[in-house]
Length: 289
Ligand code: UTP
Image (cartoon, rainbow, N blue to C red; front, side, top):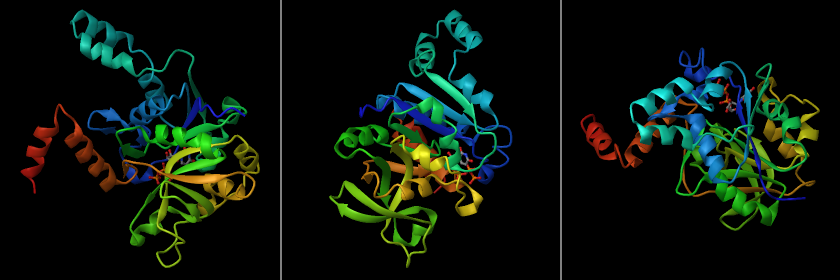
């Protein structure tokens, strides 16, 4: 089987209850960090990894995402008339090519596993990526690109992982590790949100996956897990032994933008890292602390 990863799924069908009221009428993936929606960071990360086809699994507020990844005729015409060439070029730079974006609707928010399963016919029989836009990663080389680089060596299923303080294991899916070379860690098992004393390691699962299509056969069963939801991690755990399963310790910093404080921190970090506003952002920040 080819190991070229051409397709990526972006599940954007969650309810985003932690971000109400902002997420009442729009998906949380449209929340901006500095001046760019979370979903655009994820799409650009995928583009940097060579992804060619972009599959959005939406819930409510689908139109905002559809419009964002399409030409805005009025806006572009106005920018053109006003001679704002740089802004116009920047708007067009990251637009996926025509026919390379697909939308499917997750008709009920039945969990991440269910969202991924909804894209099964659009993915077909090839390995693919999944990116959760609310996990935002600041990195020199795109996190997904780092995974795609490492994938041919191991194949099977791959997740991005990072080491977290032991007292935080309860917030994450935690890897039961096998062989570990410091970068690639073999996944022998996954434990969902264990207390620090029960955690088999401090290696936490982050929202980036490269998966083999046989995962759909497991998701077909529709088995409900934690919270009554169809969990992607349950399907991956069920494949252990049948397919290789590895975690990649990526280089970069991850921000949990599904959480208010994580989102705030992401705004600080991304503003400070920006050449155009970094110095001003630093000065503004210093006046508060
Ligand atoms: P979360 O666990 O953060 O859930 O989903 P949520 O509904 O988005 O947010 P809260 O907890 O209510 O505030 C993790 C990822 O899985 C997607 C979400 O969009 C997010 O990217 N997801 C989750 C779906 O696409 N569908 C679902 O049914 C559940």
